[in-house]
Length: 270
Image (cartoon, rainbow, N blue to C red; front, side, top):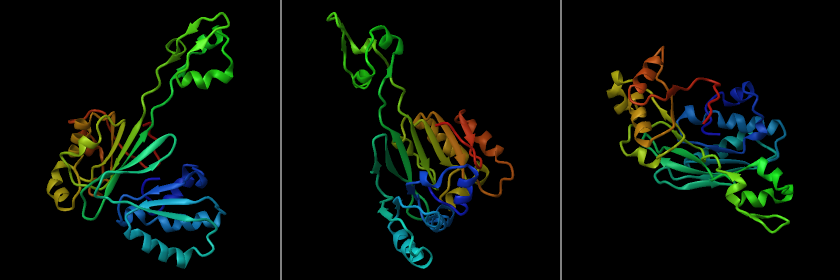
């Protein structure tokens, strides 16, 4: 989970996402709209009998506040909350498992803030089923072939691996650029990202407001996506002064055509 604003657990229920699926929470910064839902979610997990650890990745200032809240509201929680401090000022890998890595992306806001870059690790190639059947290759050898092994038939013929597999899908990546002013060099950290979420609080009609409050315009978000060669851009974090966010989308698409508005409960293919 990336950020945990007020009402997060209600949205999880509406989306029918099982609470047990959440194992890591990445908090970009300590403004309330990004972390006020955390203590309520932690408490609810305990009431539902959770036993698995929950990992929180955030600025070190959150740890003390969270410990105080848990001491008041989450006694006998029943599971361990593990806190991992992150340095919002530098780029580093803060999580890794068999399938992906998570890196911090230093941003510039009114308080220490970072984004997160989720990178899928290279995938194994696809098996060519017709070739497996033709050479009667046993199922037990398929994983070896995916890992690059050739096959030798009973007659001694060597079948090269390239004939048995098709290229793997390109690894996917998702960059979450939370609250930030426009950073002209940000695209250098996001080259080739599949999907980019970038805040677009204002339109160019409120450029001065964006600069004052360390936010970005939709056009600036599109410039980052264009310069990064992103696959698609998701806009969000709109100012309430815009009753119709279409104006922000139109502005972004003048710079980067494959831009979309983020909407509540929407599921987006990265």
